[in-house]
Image (tube, rainbow, N blue to C red; front, top):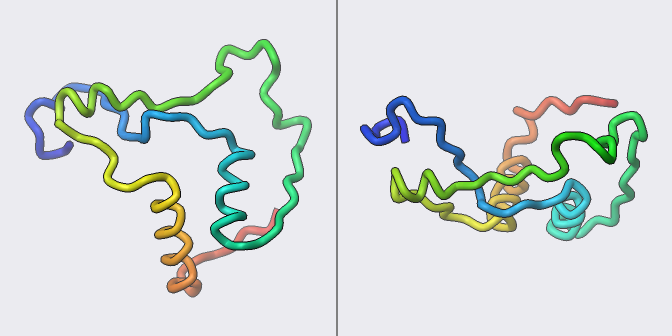
Length: 98
């Protein structure tokens, strides 16, 4: 994108073109790790029912049109690659305790 003349002055979303909830994402990660997890939800962090944004979704149509770009890996593949990288690079990861 940085090397394309067609992106100059444009705001372009780069993403999957589908939505995934935090719960579904956590479930996918749990599956890939083969670990049972429990999700704890902080009521003060839950988006209000009548808030202005109900769903977050990256529309990558502009990237496809201007850059002929499309995602090269699926969400699952990307998560698996991230998990593998983290396993191989534990010394570089600083875990934050909540």
